[in-house]
Length: 597
Image 1: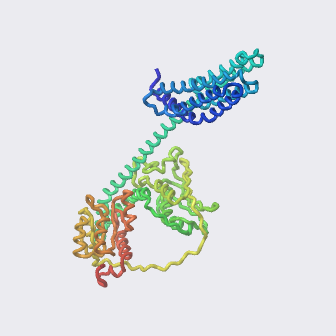
Image 2 (image 1 turned 60 degrees about the horizontal axis):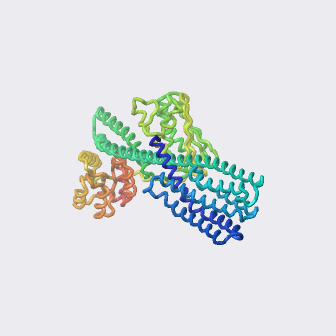
Image 3 (image 1 turned 60 degrees about the vertical axis):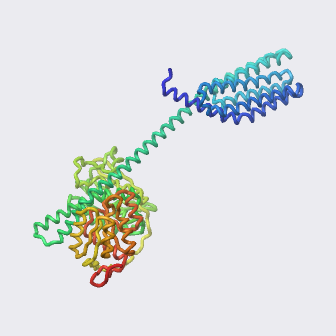
């Protein structure tokens, strides 16, 4: 008994054979029919045209039957595979018998014509190896009658017309030997055919498994992104409230002990906020809403600034940090995004180096500048090097020390490198250190453009009417506390409907709106409704939501988007920018101008 798997494989082979026979059944009639016409013409001079013509008609009738029936066999599911194969064998035998009948013309052919006749039949037999894929029953059903009749015609002296010569005996034996060789070739051809069918079936199965695995991986990535977004939103809400209240507390007159507590509390909030921002960076990059603004800039001054910023952190661990960059080094890239990449590399180098130094150098290599960040730290074992670019994967931090980050730095680096179309290489050896190399497109050196100094005066927020829209009572209260400390007049709303009532009752100068409100309500809809009444109304969108689709919505709306928790400095700067973009700076100064209309 065949196993289920073996029966399945055999069934796939049988189906493939039927499909091949159907295809060949539409190709074979042309050369085979031409051969039949040639044989009939050679015999037509000596026998009745009705006899030769009748045989040709019989040949074409069989070919037509094969063309019609073989073409339908693959789809005849009412018959079993075995029964359909038996029909194919019967059609092949019928075709062989019809051509074997042509040997009845042998007594009427001369020696030259008999040779041509034999060659045509042998050619048809050889061609049947390919047209039947060497399947033994189908192939032998055609080969046996043709070869046996052909050999018999020679070995019988043209059916007794003359005495048999030794050459004719030899030719008969050679024809049988040729048939045996064709049988061997057919056996090999069939084996190759079966293997190719099985390989193709296995490949299809593997492709299906790969597609399934890919779909599962994509589902897992989407689930992870949704989890990041939900967790980030839920965590950012209380953090945002704490940040606003901490900023408001710091602005009040406090005794030294209380001021120190407030300062440390704000530092802790900012530390937690920076780690949440790392999660946000992942979501932004996955959402593909990070714009790239390439420009040419000096690499030497840019790296020197980074070196100076990281110098206190390095010295705090007893490390040295060296920079080697030629003053003529200029590159073309997005300086802000590239800085995120290099910052992460330098930060990791300091973080995982306990003694020695961190080296930053830049060298020209053809059309690129190669920037390297090398350290003498713990290094990365070869088996772990492929995993360091995964989210949350860290080396040497089993206790998940928050001082060592979340393990998102190199994951962000990997995404940014792809976004900037840079080439990143890593060389590392455990216990020796690591070296990360970036290849950045070189640019022509140029003189720094002198830009006029911006006005240092900040926009006055005193008596500015601010409408705060947020569905969280605590957030609304914290925003009111902070903005009141700046002298703003604050109206609060928890929904679009309430915001419209407040906005129509007293026109706001600016709206600070949460992106996701309760139920189907959302901040974008609220802003659209308010701007229908106040077309040039400045607005800042504030959100704890990091879902890629939500980030794209805000990006496409062209609104300033702040992510919770928002510091007082960020909030004030965003308010000033939104007002400056939508209207004159004088509109902010309530003592000098009326409300924004």
